[in-house]
Length: 542
Ligand code: PEP
Ligand code: MG
Image (tube, rainbow, N blue to C red; front, side, top):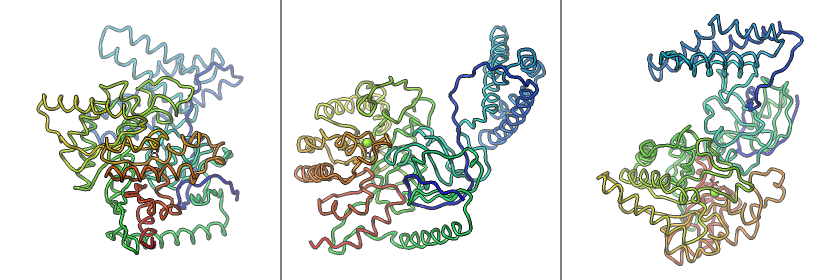
């Protein structure tokens, strides 16, 4: 048995098989080999694996999108057997004594160029197919799973690191736990793991590649991972799992109960979600509403900018599923660690201080108004509120209002139904916004304090940088004072203030937040009932 230690970011325990997730961005290089026969065998094996993948894709497509759209995978599978293509790869390996990846790449270039020059449109279109199957073969040769989990059973996913966009695209059904060798507790990947209630451990440092496929126990509370666990470790795991289930049963009994302290102080407990998939968990855990819908994940899940219709459908579905409960949708907070290829954002020296969130929206008003129109249209179907991230000044709010007015006018002109009056609030997640919260409060309907970024910017600590974690003090007095000040300024202006950053779910601070007068806490779905339990056990003596 081997025990390794990282940082637990999502409290739960699980046992399963380790699965190494590889992403390989290396360009293919030409390597001279001494054993071409071994390369021929690698090529043959890669063809077999590619054929298996394509068969599985064909079956899945048949079930989900029907015969016509599934055909392409069948064509690709047949192309793998194409004699000309295969003998070209073999010939290059044999005559040039090179690696199979390079031979596939050269063949791909030759064949795709040949197809591209054909006059027949159908044959010209085959050029893309050649590139596609060649890429698949190269990936198989490299042992690269390309983000898909090629396992029937759910696994414990091991990755060097995961970006938020990779995380949202993973097949959640197949994941028992996340392990990352790098990564920080405050990253969005960690937040996503909490939102999905998947045990997760980050910052493990190193993990022997030999461990791939072995059984492991992951303790998301303590950050311990046991590989090849012995009997004692399995027995300890079983006990902990039982305790966990017992606690869950207890929390489930709090469904339908108010979030009220013993002396009668009540607050709202809402859920943070990353997308529609998390709504069921929010409802199962008896969320009073959605306090933070991170709409950017809709952008990260896609390979294109989501259209107004696509967004409208998603927001409408959220509003309808919440059936009259509040849904606070945050306009997209792309940038910093949340990157998407198609937006082609510039590379920056200091991305966390850079072109992100509302700054992108106000620089690209067309893109912003697409989202605003979708939101105002969805407002007809439920209690939708809009929230704007990364605000630093009243000028930004004025510019936002101008865009809202234009978006509404566009809808009016096109006679598309929308809700005229919608609650709008801002995230208080920059020290600037916190300090001038007295000026901002009369301009909005609510504040939601984003403690993740507020801490990052107040303490000048990059939340993505794991080597700074010993300096990351989430309970720093500066952050707590700012939170208190924001709540007071909100109340002076007659608006409500909540907390949607991860600190809102820290049970050691719940009492302090209630004493500060917080009106709402928005936490990941699995944390709602434990926080309710905490609130109900408290007596503020008021
Ligand atoms: C925050 O900064 O606290 C927050 C809730 O937003 P995000 O974590 O998505 O940046
Ligand atoms: Mg934030």
